[in-house]
Picture 1 (spheres, rainbow, N blue to C red):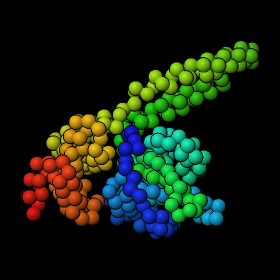
Picture 2 (picture 1 turned 180 degrees about the horizontal axis):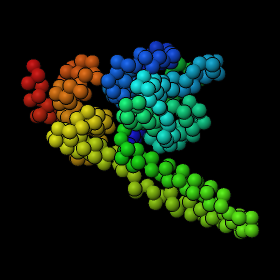
Picture 3 (picture 1 turned 180 degrees about the vertical axis):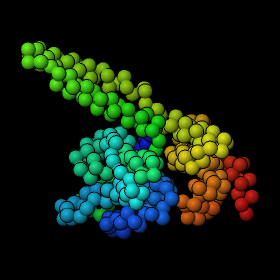
Picture 4 (picture 1 turned 60 degrees about the vertical axis):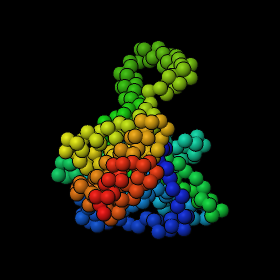
Amino acid sequence: MNLKAILWVGSIGFALHGCTTMQSLNPNSFNHYASPQEVINQKGLNSANGKAKEYVYDWGPQKKNMEAESLIPKQNMSSYCQAKNGKFIQLNKSNLNQVKNAWSRKLLATYSSIKQGTGVFQCSQADGQRWMVAIEPVSERKSNDRSETRLVSLYTAIIGPDERRKNYNKQEENVAKKVTSSKAKATTTKSNAKDEAKKEVETKKEAKAKEPENKPAAKPVAETSQQIQMRLYVNARRDLNAGKNQVTACNNAQRAYSYGKLNGANANRAYAESGMLVAKCLTSVPAYSKSYPNANARAKGILQNLATNYNHAGAKNMLNRMK
């Protein structure tokens, strides 16, 4: 998953944050949820428009004993996993690459609540089912009330193995390299220990010398926001047309639509058509629509946006049929 900071974050009144402070979560209270996606929707872990939601991660020195709200998404997903008698573990820490501001990235990296509460987590349920959830920061800011409180915008999404590999493969490679290096050092004999130490120093020097060249070379490999949006839309359309993996397809359509209108003719098409898919999911895929209160009203809102702002003929026709 490449959760880029294309997720527009609506401003949220700081007064509302008092309503989202954490309470002790009883796993038994999660028994009635049918899926992890339903937990995300019903608990409002993302904002009402399906995009990133702001949480307090630092209350400032005057309220330093208050627990960070940024742990709320993780704690809710962990409690649901426990309700299924599952084991909840962190597979990857967030690399914070969706946070555009370099200073904000450095600041967030110093907070344990961010390290512990973001990244990729996996639940292995007692019934054999497994699912993964990504909780990614997309921005952070200081509150508007003149206090020292700081807020982080988090986007929570259910992801698959392919998406995890695509976006966290570099992190996995680094871990593998460290493990391999540790094993190599452990098998080094005393007789060649000095030689190995010299080689390690030389290797580090070479790595440092090559580092400026390697970093720019990695940039072209990354997908653009337009490519990600198009990929999600194409996958969603394919699966829905085939009548398979419908809930996953609807989630992919929702994520593509959440990217918003990007530059380029293909991007405009991906945005509008993914919105049409979301509307159809909300009105004709019960397994998906049941996770949303007032699914029909939500679908009409999407269709009205497409009909009014993009003169979309399909949206107009679907609206007429819904009257």
